[in-house]
Length: 282
Ligand code: AMP
Image 1: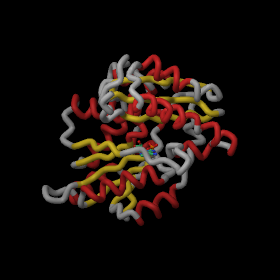
Image 2 (image 1 turned 120 degrees about the horizontal axis):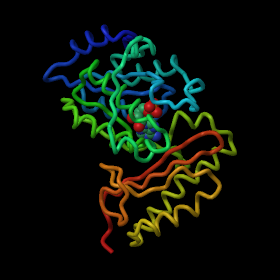
Image 3 (image 1 turned 90 degrees about the vertical axis):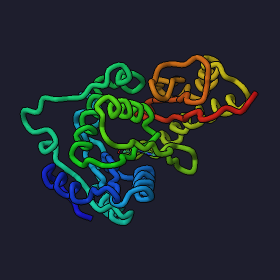
Image 4 (image 1 turned 180 degrees about the vertical axis):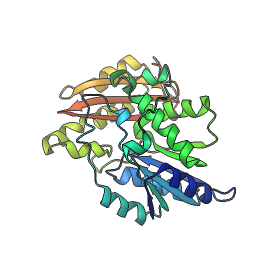
């Protein structure tokens, strides 16, 4: 696996990798890799001839009081894992390489970019959209792979790709969880053993809601109330039922509804969700 730090070299190598009959897949990450990230790489490998991964802890998507400085960094181990998974190219630029002095352009996906995490983390999705647009321009992939774990991010990026006519396909990949149900996240490393146990309230709340939907409940208010019963020991940011594409609230559950939760467990902000794909007839 070749590790590249400059935009110019990455552009050059991707240009050579990308051919009509050999699709190039892109897997953007912030490193501290776990099985969730690797599932994106595997999906990319199943659909693409070559894979470029990126590791960049993007300062633009962190708020002033967020965890940029302490975000986990495990670069050598990440490289080993990506190489083992068949990644041909890893782009790991410095901040100065991505945002040279004088850089003045950002991408705001208005409306949708201010919903869910965008509401509680102002500017977050502008940071995400800006860096992902840059990565799309640099690598020019045929397909880019993102986790459904960050469902709001996926919706914002799909909107951006549509609006700006990026000539690529965005592929959403299922959430990978630990055996006890907690969605894998680089931020799980922050949790003490007691907090790790408390964090299970998030998947429990979602499961509770999922079971109620399976039993025929369709009203968002009732479902949210039921989910809330599981969340009284964490500091809730949101528990919401929204349209997965627009992130606008829905009052009646239907296929394409996203049930999303965000909460702080101690100092750590965690998110989780599930997508209603089809409804059992009631
Ligand atoms: P991050 O490094 O947190 O920016 O995540 C990089 C990519 O991995 C994003 O597309 C995430 O949605 C995806 N990802 C993170 N955690 C998981 C997970 N548990 N399951 C599937 N994808 C994930």
